Length: 472
Image (tube, rainbow, N blue to C red; front, side, top):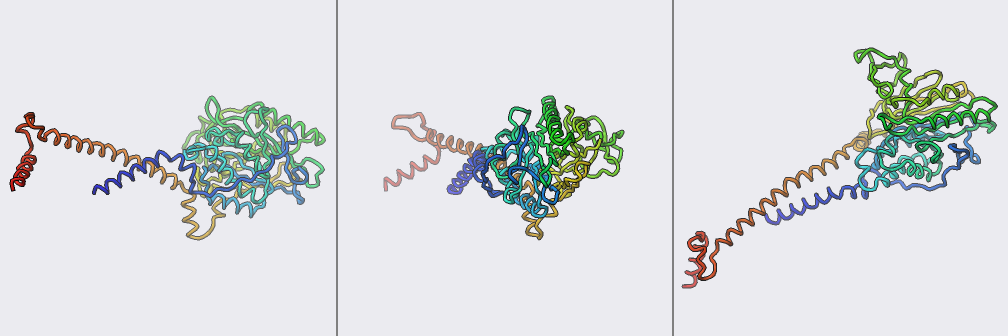
């Protein structure tokens, strides 16, 4: 019994040490995903302030020979260092099926608020996320661009500049850190020339929509960023014979003007009504007839610094693509500009089987100037591996059971230790008190009568027995 108690105490001590060492364990031994080594390559060369060029065709980005450009948008991957193998498998399968010319990561690649990301070296964890989500893209040699969301840096505790530098270390990265010239990090543009290389055919804006506003709500694109977009538009028009070069915009947080698309209704009892958020807060809205894919209230900032008005005035932006609202996939139109929601591709943050996916955009160099483009959403569930075994594996990969299991083990261990050790200490104190009492009741030296007549019966009996033995 003594041996059992000794083993139990050792086991409890070990479990307590594990709880205290959880940060180191999480940092040193990730068990849910295999590490993907990062490749290293020089960062893309900037062709103008805030502009980047690709490495193909002598350093320029050009429409394919058929005049059609295909873009895959990975939005809100939002994962920890334990990236789901199901996610990377699905992204790889979509890339193989679609063969896009460009991949855009639309922000919130990192689930910055998750406690696992902050156990140990969170910068190493963030880089591990980037390693794994880029692997399907870089392994196929596809160029990619990046914008940041509200969870990538501030919540994760690793600056955008550090993350951008790491993205740029991968081959095919077209993203640019514009430095101190603009607020945030990662506001830049890419120019695609026509398939014959004779003219600028498409301009892609990538805008850092920032994180959180100091006065509350989400971040808002600043006046400086809006002015920069105007300058780029005007400069490109001058090089294009005075005609605006058609453009698409990619940014994480949607513009406040999205609520001008919806119909304002009286209250929550109206069919399809939802409470507005951000700039729409305080009102009830419903999607107009024919507009599908509105599964949650969009979450723009509380105000606008004139970004949408600048698009409308310049006339170059044909459509803007946003993430942030994981289950929305609508394709709205306002004043000739497409406002398109890209669903989240996350398997860990909030989403649903019928929503999580990847948006595909197809642009024809001959028709984009008139605002024509094609877009569709591919659901991740359509690219799952078939079979019951794959389904079981997928469940454990995509659910948060491991997060909860580890948390349960830690909390359970702490609870058991909190109950056991006070009881153990109290038991030891009682034993020591009893032993001390026995010692105090034992007979003293000859002539010491302090304990005379107070010896316990057990001691008396033992003394008598010893005396009898001596006489015999």
